[in-house]
Length: 84
Image (cartoon, rainbow, N blue to C red; front, top):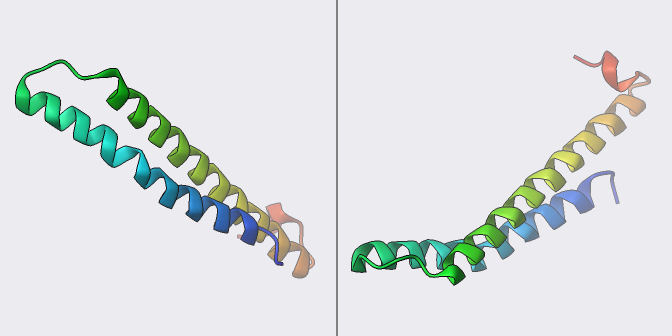
């Protein structure tokens, strides 16, 4: 498998996985705003978990991009810092 492809796949899977947490957390905030009640702790936890998963996905996708960039530079016979 080419360099970085695994990072892209896992990053995309994490982005999809985050959809289990973020909408439920946002729903809790919207429900509490509509009912003028305090936000329950479960909604805050779900939202934090979702945001952490999204940040991890972004980091993996960026790492995959960097690995692909380095591989292309090696194939061109240049150092990665020499490419435009």
